[in-house]
Image 1 (cartoon, rainbow, N blue to C red):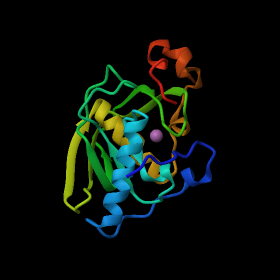
Image 2: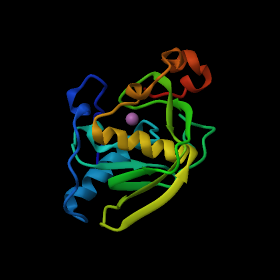
Image 3: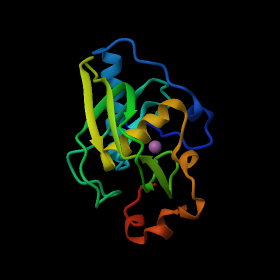
Length: 179
Ligand code: NI
């Protein structure tokens, strides 16, 4: 297990469409997930997608059992490994909230997302995942899965007057930032 380098915006590897995972419960897959967990924990991420460490497969991890110092006032999301995900919006309602990204260090922006979604996929053993979620949980899933189609959150921003440096926008949280 090891902490891997996180690619930053501008790296063309973040713009690729990821390949589906074909085989489950393999040593290679478990090792990748262990590295992703270590990497996410080291930088207090809310989630991480495999393409962010240069591995072009449809795999994201998100959630935690503890409060995230980068998002101290957000509800907790269960720790999840989600592979080959499919997101279906439930209704047309959207909501806006602040997002950051480990591949876009030091910045935050207000991003519109579907308020309620159903997401399906598989875990690392190939067992199905099927959840209906809303709010912050739905936002995290949409953000992470966007990485699997080459989308970074700034590409989703509609109002660039609400995009800026974390240390300026949120001085208290900025002090806790690793990025
Ligand atoms: Ni991200």
